[in-house]
Image 1 (cartoon, helix red, strand yellow):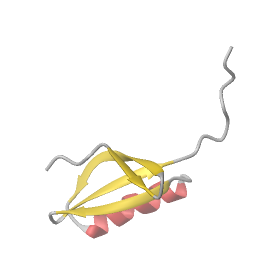
Image 2: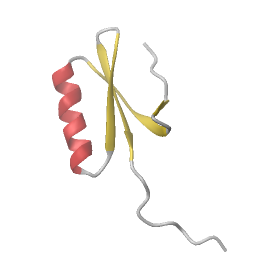
Image 3: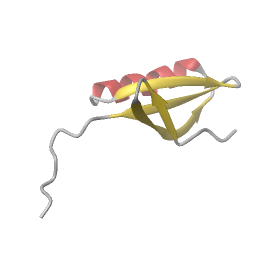
Length: 65
């Protein structure tokens, strides 16, 4: 199983966290950790394995010179 690195949902880009979780419980624990760190999270079920995709909007924009 090779999950997509990027997932688009509702016009938003989510990035795969690089882990394949064997159960929904494991994925839910990872989801909760990401939410505590202010990430938006989307969990997918692929053939009985779970993938967690995250996104976070930058709080500051770097100045371009």
